[in-house]
Image (cartoon, rainbow, N blue to C red; front, side, top):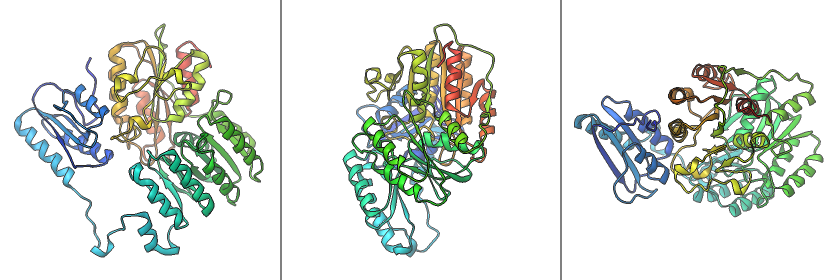
Length: 510
């Protein structure tokens, strides 16, 4: 069985092909993914990959039989096309060129051209401008932009990753002194006064404020609250490193104080991957001195379950705990000796799965392991994302998003991993997350259903999916759940419930 290609990136070996590298050309990974999809839909085109020439993208090209000759660097643009004949190939290449040359056209006058830096834009807007700036530029340039916002007295959401930790500390200390908040770096999810930013879901307004050193953790919790009929006031992302020893919870402490002063917020939930113990203790001490009650949803071996934290909060508030939505899978169990294979787009959800499954299964290898000795030693090659036995991969880790969009947008690597798992015929239970909301794939089931169907045809492969989202999301939780269940997957709104179901299939328990 050959590895399947992502939607719009078909695999084939016949026909004619063109593979080229271009220097001095850059486009963001989301745009390049869309170019690949659009060109692949043309008649006579059998394979397309337009992407920056990172090691992972070069490996994908090789899998498709479209590897370039000679050396390539991540700063170069790879354009690889296969078609049925010369005419179709020429038309496809012309379409690629046209798509890359296309630029957004301003409908205003020349005087309406926006400023190109945060500082210039805020200076033009003056004191009456927005209270929050968003920085989404390559990491090396993000610090200057964020510093300009802080100097102008604005809070700032730093969507960018790749910011050195010492620069993060400097920004957060400056923000504290200025009385503003830095969310990030690598802050992918926030909701501020009802405005969703980044990968946020459509949830109802309400009295619960979230401080989150976790994007998908915040999404899981806010979606479960919405399903229980409880809304959120704000979701303040602080970046995944904030509760590390190096950063010391600087933004978390400021965010807790901001929510404590917010008249709409009646309860606070703190969400994080496992933090540094000393930082966790300092944050807990500060939280205990606030007037608004704070409940922890910080993952640890003792508290490994985000859903349980939500249920505890609902009980605190006097609400009934609902039966969380699910779609039962087919009556099947794993082949004896099967292993857990977790393919996640959310790092916190991957951590939660490992924390829940570890006591029942033993060691779980990962590219983001809970213990250093379980590290897969990922070196930029996709072959290091698999190993015998129990494995959980975080496809959203920074090392896997260089030169490509986050897996919540671009499913390429996960689809390849599903195909490769089926090709190896290793007995397994596949556990995944699918995260809906603003910014995410507009129809994740469209690409995932064919991949799962093909993998299950190759041999027994129970599939369990944690579907994070709401009915109000553009993708609709129910519509996605129905499509995934029709492909043979068991679907759960709770990642903890999905993990426990996968353990049941394996004959284990958490």
